[in-house]
Length: 224
Image 1 (cartoon, rainbow, N blue to C red):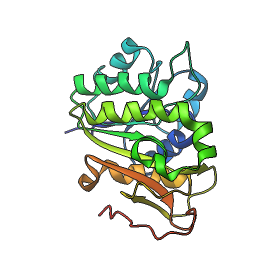
Image 2: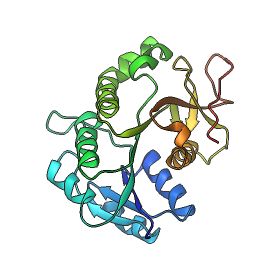
Image 3: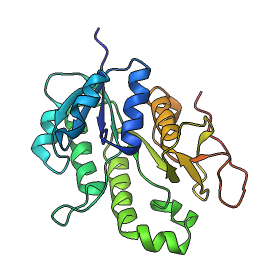
């Protein structure tokens, strides 16, 4: 039986690009949906099947998720600047979640952010003032996923750094924790969640154990 694809939305940059690198290094079959074709050649050179489509367009999303391949897991890292008054953080993820339900996908991994939902208590007032509107949209996406009936894992990274992986990235169910984490370490954690049933239907914060704010101890979740 042919191996199913992992469908990745947000692969053009940031955490999504690091996830693409990690999964292909693990010899996983990946299909990526890109809003523009700018990154297409780079991703195809990594062995990734690419489809150009906008997550804010329901027809694009449904076509990407139902055009012949078997897809076991959807991973979404999408977000960003408003387009026509709508942010991809909620509407784009809503479209992906609806299409995943329709395509009978087994699992949906959503990369959100510390500060969303109950983890709002982990952020400083200054950070909240800056990120507030985005976090509202991310929380809506989280709730929509939880209520969708899909098996889900929600990962809320702390402050992100574009540096090589440290291997010190951890998941915790402690929503009061805050700190920094490298994008490449988030990618490793996401990749491990793809194959870990222990993370099913759970919400995590993701931080580097050596870059916590306030030097608290962190209750690390075991992925194995």
